Length: 81
Image 1 (tube, rainbow, N blue to C red):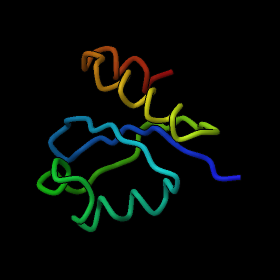
Image 2: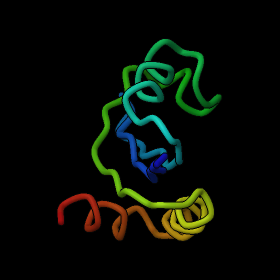
Image 3: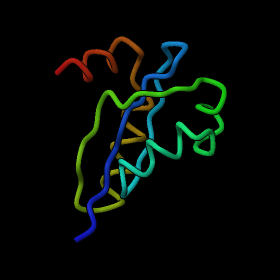
Image 4: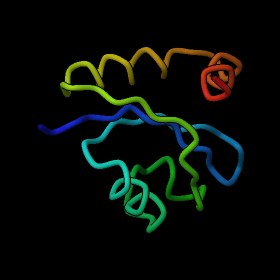
């Protein structure tokens, strides 16, 4: 069974990036090689600070969308849990 993840990265400039993937380790490597999301390319290195597991891509995408709407303060509260 393939699992899907919604994740938050902390960038070198202290901004936060939220995304989803089905291979969290590979995605983190991709981001840090500078071939991930355009947003993270100029903010390397990035560090994984939060992840959630889901059984379906749809669930992970919905959670990503929800988290992206949160304020920075709420995202930091989520990370600290």
